[in-house]
Image 1 (cartoon, rainbow, N blue to C red):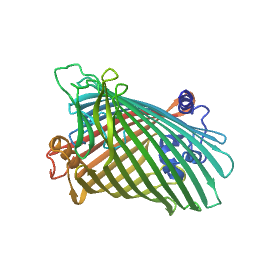
Image 2 (image 1 turned 60 degrees about the horizontal axis):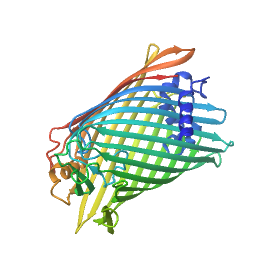
Image 3 (image 1 turned 90 degrees about the horizontal axis):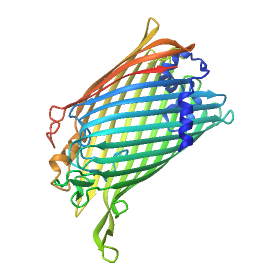
Image 4 (image 1 turned 45 degrees about the vertical axis):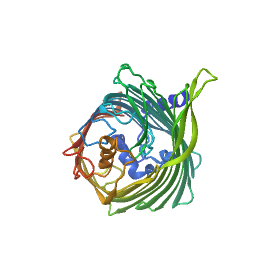
Length: 530
């Protein structure tokens, strides 16, 4: 792991050395590098790391310190009611001849309050095999992440790239049963882009992701018998207690393979279309017990198919139009092992679990389709004077759980969002202000089921109520870029603050848990760009 970490350090922390303007842009454009690169680089919205070679702004270093505060009761039942976080992020871009580099290092320290029903970290969102307890506790979270990418222009028509990403998380709390969780993802993403002629370019990218996690518990008060819930989806579970195993342990192992194809067509400077199709296979397995015994906690596999199309054209001299279509289809399967406890009397009464049968207990089909329209007023190569974004989409999830009989859940949701951003100069500084609204509501009549009654009111119904809840919200962001000079290099200090407030608008059909609730997220920070 030492070589990728050193490479990321080099990419993220040395990109400002001998900084030069990029093409038609100037050093003053660097605070808006993300927006400008997205507008100028059609591959920027894809999964191909070779997109790095086509950035308009390809040399900068940015260090950001961010604080985030989450408040309010409108959240999934397995999330914290309140959360405070502080993060530090160092990001860099650098081009050396035909070699383009990118890297970042980020550290986050956070604390979540009143957390329960999920002791995992970095697990796939729709994996039903979650290890949980019902005791509300305050969770400390530390997260470290880095990425390092390099794209090399092998010829005038061929670019090859390789990207590494590493993320690790540690969770802990001081309330019995005191779960302690460690998790990590290590990803390798290769990619190539080939220019066929003056109008067409094609790309191919791969993705390998290795996931590992371990969970352990430490019970200090042996007079209280804590319950460990081995969730199986739709309110179904198997339970163990701290009386039988105080230090209950679980290990997750996962692997994801993905591949994508891109096709970019352009006609002059005023029209272009980017198409990407991506397919991924993911598998995650849970095993409990550690070295003392093995209890299989469920196998999960998923297949994802994603479609992305971005149509860009310009009218007049300054209006840029973009239509972005996204669609996804995911099928998930969960397998459970029927196991019985045995005692090996010939080997010191060692306890083990014998597997009697493996069967499918979970199947879910998730579909999503969305359309985004973006309009920018942009003159020359500068960042847009203003940007308007409109998004809408629908999603459907149908889940079947197999027990003695089959149980079904199904719901569909409509989402809509609108944002407007205005940018202007104030003396030597630059200001950007954003206002936005969002809305979501259910479509049709949802189907609800729960396998067991014990957790219906405390877990199953609140989970389904949140997933199907109508909601509305608004957001605002204000940022100011202030020019300074450091070591003779043009530098920008950016001060920013943003807020997102979401309000529950449902009818408490399945649970009154969210009655009169809302959720607020506030971010504020400072960044230095050079």
